[in-house]
Length: 595
Image (tube, rainbow, N blue to C red; front, side, top):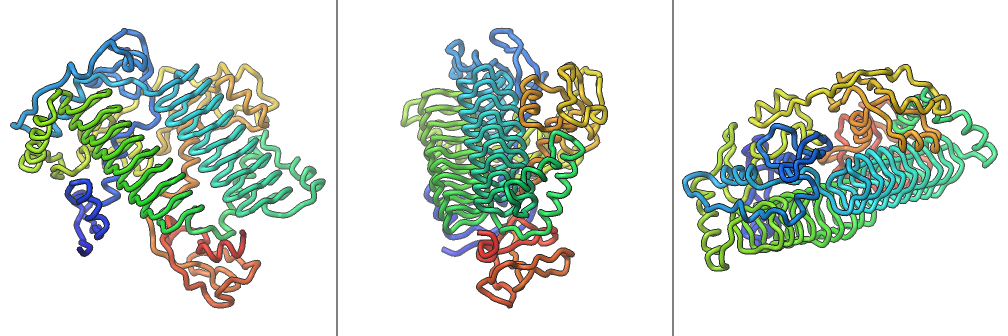
C-alpha cells in the first residue's frame, strides 16, 4: 500500500493519504476522506458552539433560560433541568428512513424535531451562566471546564480556583490572563508556563517565583525582564511595575513584547512526548498533526484539543477521556468506535449522532440515552438494524447530499456545515478560522446577525480611574464602553459590566480594570498561541548567534551548541510561518540556551 495525493473538494488543495491512514480507515470500515485535514477540521468546528449566550424560553416548563441557540430559530429548546428529566422521550420523535431524499436532509429534519438543551452541564452550582461544563461552583461565563470554583470568563479550565480570563489552565489558584499553563498561584499574564508563583508576564517558564516579564526561564527567583536581581533589588524595583495602574500595565505589555521578539523560542511546545508532530503537546506519543493534547494520547492523527487516554483515533476535536477508535468527532468522550458524531459519550459503535449518551449501535440519532439498535431515533431489533444500516449507507452513496457550493457528501463524510445548528460566526470555526460575512455566505453557510443589547454606555473605558485603588464600588453600576468600540473583528460587544466578584479579584490581585470587553480580551489572549498549520523550517541558530535576512533582531548565544560555529543543520515542523518575526530554534539549540 502506497501513499496517494488527492485534491480536496472544498479548497481544491492537494493532500496526502498515507499507508497508515488507509489501514485506519479499513479498520473502522470507512472510505478515505475527500476533504483535506484543514477543511475537515473547519467542518467539525462549525458544529460546536462558541461562547455566545442568548435569552430564551424553555418550551417544556415555560421558564426563561439562557441558551446557546439564537431566539426565533427552528429548534425546540428545553432548559437544562427539563432536558435531563424524564418528562420527555427522544424516542417519541423517531421516524422511518425515507429513501427518496438524502440522509443529511433527513437528519436536519430530525434535529429540528428533537428537543435540544439550551445549555449543557452537570453539577453546576450557582453557575447559571456556564455551558458544557462539569462540577462547577460559583462560576460565571465558564465554558468546557471541569472541577473549578469561583472563576469567571474562562474556557477549558481544569481544577481551577479564582481563575479569571484564562484559557486551558489547570490546577491553578488566583490566576489572571493565563494561557495553556498549569499549577499556578497568584500570577497574571502567564503563557505556556508551569509551577509558577507570585509572578507576572511569563512565557515558557517553569518553576519560577517572584519573576516579572520573563521568558524561557527554569526554576528562577527575583528576575525582572530576565535580569537576575537580589531579593532586595527585586522588591525595590518591582514597585515601579505596579500593575494596579493601567498606564503601567500597558507599559509592561509593550516591554514584554519587545523582549519576546528579542529571544529565541522553541519550535513547538512539546513536553514528555515521543514521535509526535504538532504543537502544545504533553504526555503524548506516536501522534501526528496534533494540537493541544495531554495525558496519555497514543497513535492518533489530526487531534485538536484532546486528552486523557485517547487512543488510536483520527480527526478529533475536544475529545478523549478513555476513548479509542474515534473518527470525525467533536465533543465526544468515554466512547469506542464512534464516528461522525458531536457532543456524545459513553457509547460504542455509534455513527452520525448528536448528544447521545451511553448508547450502542445507533445510526443517525439525536438525544438518546441508554439505547441500542436505533436509526433516526426509531427502535429496531439487531438483525433489522444491521440490514437497514447497510441499505442506508448504500443509499448515502447513491443519493448523496450536495451543498450550495457543489460539495458532495456521501457516507464517510462528517455532517455538512450547511445543516449545523449554529451559524458560522457562532461556532468554534469562526474563532480558529475567521471569515468575513461575505466569505461565509459565499461558502453557502449561515451568518447570525447579533442584535445589540438595549443598554446605554455610562462610562467610556478612557474615563476609568488609572489605578484599581481609585475605583469605587459604584463602577459596578456602570456600563463600560469597550475601547474597540465594535470596529475590531473579535466579536466585540461594544460594552461590558463588571461583576462584584471580578472587582474583588482585581483589588486582591492589584490589577487595573480591563478596558476591553470579555470577547476582545479572549481574542487578545488567543493571539499568544499559533493556529493549526505546520510549516517546514530550519533552525535559525547560525552558530554564535541567530541570523536571518527578514528579521532585524539578532540573538547572541550564551552557550556552545552541538554545531559549534556552523549553522544548525536541524529542520522541523512548526506553527511559526517563515514570515513571522520570531527567532525559532530547534529543540537541541533551545535546550542548550535555556534548559
